[in-house]
Every structure is written in C-alpha cells, then in structure tokens.
Image (cartoon, rainbow, N blue to C red):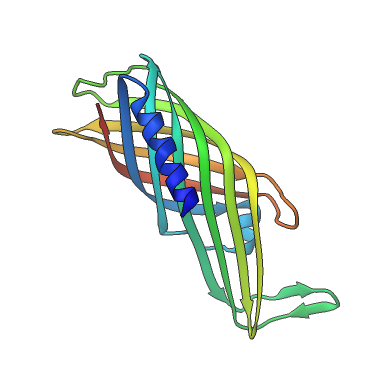
Length: 195
C-alpha cells in the first residue's frame, strides 16, 4: 500500500509541476522477447499503465510511469533438471511492475490544435519481476527488483476534450540475482488529457 501512495504522489507532482501537463491511462498488450519468451511463449492481454508528464519546454516533457503486466502459460513442456529432464503439467506466471522516470520529445507539439502529436522518448527505473513455476505439487518462485529501461514511440490523436494515445514500448530489464534479464514489447492504447 505504501508503494501505491508513493506512486500517486510522484504522478501528481510530475503532472502538476508544469503549466502544461497530462495524465494518461493505457491498456497494454505485450509480446515476450528473449528470456521472457523462453519462460512464457504467449502474449499477454493483461496490462495497464498510468503516466503523468509535465512539459518543461515546448518540445520536452518529463514524468513518471507506473505499469503492470502479467504473462501466463499452461503446458507440459520438457524441463531440464539437475540430473536429467522432466515433463508434466505446468503453469508459468510472470508479473512485471515498472516504476520509471520518463523523458519525451515532441517534434511538433500542437497541444491545442486538431493535429496528431507524435513523440519519441523513454524511461529508466525499477522493475519488480516475479516469476513462478507450478509443477505438480511444487511451486518455484523468484522475486526481485531490477533496473531497466524502456524506449518508446507514440502519437496522440485529439478528440473533443481528450487525446487518444497509441504507442509501442520496448522494455529491457537487467539480470538480478538468479533472475535472468527480461524483455518484452508493449503495444499501448489509451486516453490522455492535457491541461
């Protein structure tokens, strides 16, 4: 609960510190890459992000992004174990929770016009990664905070009183402890407002 309160405060500060600010909420569809795909091969349809940004120059904004993505997969794939291999019913689960500081550049910042506003940027910060493997009666779980980064490209389409936001974000999370580096690609669709 404390971390959610801290995130809410950071988002409020990020979106309210500048004359032109915006808050966005997006639905995220994610495709696993690299080690993440080796562990879970299925795309995730369960993701959500909340982001606050403030414009400190006409073409630049800084902010904070908080997200949540769940990957899961049922199967009976062959697993390597210490003295051989094993197979059987398995359930694999991975939670990724990024909390990152962001910086974005807008080549044509028409915040108050009816034109599409493109942007490029990204973020860096901390990711909470939890991997779980349920195999028969046994459950194996790893949880770690990792450092990671996330470049992205997106655009905002003005509507009557809000913007529709679309972007593609690549998340790379560095190895920590026994948890390998993780990576996944997000396709984000949402709504935002500038004030």
